[in-house]
Length: 340
Ligand code: ADP
Ligand code: MG
Image (spheres, rainbow, N blue to C red):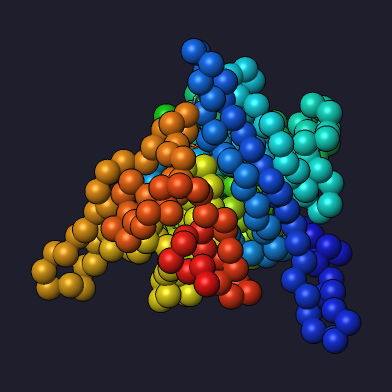
């Protein structure tokens, strides 16, 4: 675990300073399609993740969340995709400048990842124990016996009471929630500094969803790591994140601490997302949804990318895309309504 990295750093006034783990700057990931079309899936994205922090990226399907996380892992299929600009610094080291073999080490040791459907990342022909042990042997240079012992410990840590039996079982023998637990055990086996979770609970029943989120937070604390949580579900965001980025059309349209976002949302898109959360306390169902759809990344409008769906649209919104501006020090918004 990362004790030595987590020493308190004080600024010149003696206040505890938050330490940056990941810094993404000016990231552009484009797909070059047939007929010379270019899909700007991620189009000039900046953000940071501090040590120990859970940062959420939220937005409807097609807004660029997964391509952002795959860019960090350098798992963009090329061609047709390409990271065309920007930097992705993990503790100051630019991942975009690493060789493929150095990047493989980063994936095994520094960044763990879990996806929506664990069946696609678990190998059906190997036992759960084998898959955890494999990662420990490869990245932590453990001997086989030691690796299996650690695999059982990790399975216990993620909540398997029958860990000694689960090591010998195959992915198809587990339920969806159990598979996601096993994926978390694999992701944590490398003791990552950053855990990227892309829609980790979307495929699960509601009751299991909460357990998996709790487990992720528990693991984050235990391993002293940070989390990048990607979800289309603001309910999930409210439960576990510290800070939120709202993405639309390959860009960040709002950024705020989680409480601020839920009490003082600025962007009409964020307001729309908030209004579409089902409220179980409300007497009448007042579920609103935002009319229209997310534009495909090869056909963004000239002005604000949300303008065609926005109920506050003004003339200038159709002319040029607004910049992401600081509303106050921790709250940023990309919208002409807040320009002075
Ligand atoms: P999200 O995870 O937010 O649902 P993605 O990051 O997967 O969205 O995708 C964002 C957009 O990038 C998509 O809507 C699509 O327009 C574009 N895109 C993704 N993959 C490709 C691809 N292989 N070819 C062309 N466009 C793509
Ligand atoms: Mg996605």
